[in-house]
View 1 (spheres, rainbow, N blue to C red):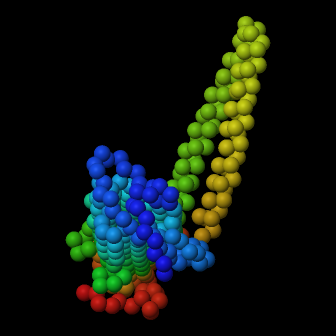
View 2: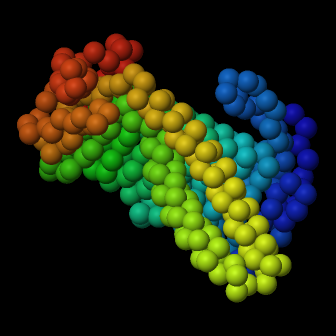
View 3: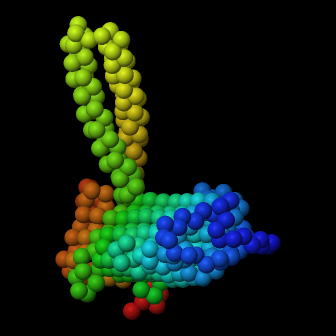
Length: 331
C-alpha cells in the first residue's frame, strides 16, 4: 500500500472545525486506503489516520472517507466520517459518528455524554454510561447503565457478556450471558422493535399535527381575507390570496409525503417477525424483557432461558440460542 502524508489541517478532504482559540500543533497524519463493505458491496475508502489521541483542543474532525485513530477519543471531541471509524483506544465523553461501521478496540466511558452512531455495525469491548445507535448489529463484552439501539441484533459475549442497567433494544434478537445484576439493578431489553423507525414515526406524527394546525390557520386567514375584500386594494388582495394558496399547496404536498412515509413505516413495523431474547447464563430479578409491545418482568433469577412472543404475550422457554453461542470463560 502506498501512503501519502497530508497535513491534519488540510481542507481538501479533511475538515477541522476548531471552535476553541487554542493553538493547534502542526501534526501530520498518514492517508492510506481500506476496503469497506457497505451493504455487502466492496468499496475502496480513503483513510484519515490519526497518530495518537483525539483531544478537545484539536477541534472536530470531519472526513469524507474512513478514520483510523491510533489512540483514544478524549472527552469533548467529535469525529465524523462518511465511511468507517476504527479507534484503537477508548472513547470517553465524546461523539463518534460514522456512515459505515465503528470498531473500538477498547471501550466507552461516556459519563452520560458519550455517543457512537453508525450506519453499519458497532464492535466494542464495553460501554459504560454511554449511548450507541447503529443501523447494523452491535457486539460488545459488557454494557453498563447505557442505551444501545440496533436496527439488527445486539450480542453481549466474551469474558462477561453482560447487560447491566440501562436499556438495550434491537429489531432482531438480543443475546447475552447475563442480564441485570445481583443487586437487582433495573435493566430493560427490548427485541422486535425498530428504534430509528419508531423515532422517525414519532417525528412524522408531530410534523403532521403541526401541518394540520397550520392549514387550519390558513383557512381562517383565507376567510378573513375574503371578508375584507371590499375594503382592500385589489392588488393587495390578489397578492395575499396567492401567497395563501401557495402556502396551502406546499403544506398539502408535504402532508401527502408524510402520510405515505408513515404508511410505509407502519407496514414494516406491523409485519416484522418478532425477535427473541436469549440468556445463556442468568437473567436477574429486576430485569424487564420487551418483545414488540408486550413485556415480561423478571421477579426471580432465571438461568439459561429464551424469551419469545406467543399468542400476544411474552413467555420464557429453555434457551434455544444457537449452540455456537455457548458460554465461554464466564464466571
